[in-house]
Image (cartoon, rainbow, N blue to C red):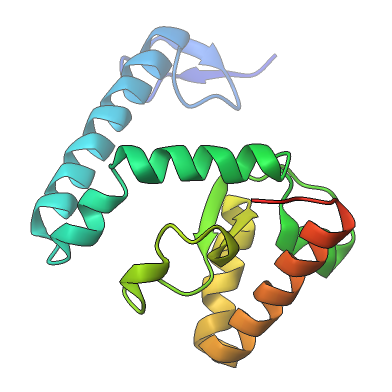
Length: 152
């Protein structure tokens, strides 16, 4: 069996690992701290404080939870685009909050997606145009509600 040295403390470990078990935990804890600091700095420097505070509000958290539960945590975008069931963990505003503040808690403006689909949707909006993507998402959302008899 090949061995090498831990990149942090120098202990002998199996080849293929970067750190020993102890250092792996330390590095992971440090990474979490760094991410928390980075996010705090990012949050403090954002200009859209009203939008930022909305995502921390009880009203948003309740609506997000309701939508995910009603849609049984299914990624609607992936379901229709790729004919596969993937777990949703994000609720996406079809019409962005920046675009129309009044639609921020509109049940029919929200769609369940996974983190991967959410990124893909935003990439599509940049490349294919927001309106085209919004229409597709509204159609997917409507189909899903009709097929699975989901009412707000």
